[in-house]
Image (cartoon, rainbow, N blue to C red; front, side, top):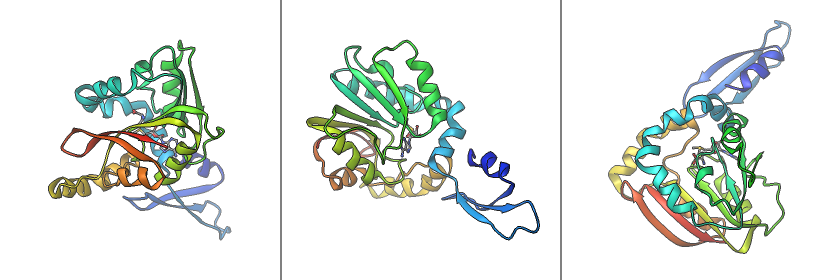
Length: 240
Ligand SMILES: C[S@@+](CC[C@H](N)C(=O)[O-])C[C@H]1O[C@@H](n2cnc3c(N)ncnc32)[C@H](O)[C@@H]1O
């Protein structure tokens, strides 16, 4: 909804004409003599800016029962220069070893603000507002790229993964914790069922074939481990 005030200030009224997948909005001028009208989409960023104040509450059960253990296991042995994509509210920050240098990026300033609060006392952490599809870092600059529950939300995941591969050193590694499209027909059915709801709320795709996307971007998958719900939640390690 973050685009609303912007648009309204420019003298437009806003009407949701297609609820659901892309939250299609019709923005039309307040002045009757203006012919012009624009249709805009509610972006993933707007959704995260909107939900940022309650995000940690929304996924608290998953965090408590599953995610925090997975984060700890995946991140606590990393070293060197690390880039975290879609750092969100900064839930991973406390799991990185103090000796590493962490750069975190996120496109949602609302989410990033919360991460900044957590990073307050951490001298080894720097956070930037940035689009994962256009990383502003030179080639071969990171030892690790970390993506946790983010490849399911980035609008063009293959483009972002190609960027992650570009900025990784040849010896580097992609570490991902993700929910992915399941090969079990019943789970696949459930994923399709909840997909529109989660997309509407969080821009989240439950049916995305993230493993295939990682390979499409040129990575070689070294480890793909099922974490929970059969093959839905996965830990992936991949080489550029
Ligand atoms: C489901 S949240 C996960 C947050 C965090 N990684 C975690 O594990 O809790 C997804 C995050 O990805 C961010 N995101 C989505 N698309 C992005 C993009 N193109 N570039 C950067 N961040 C993006 C969202 O703003 C949101 O903070």
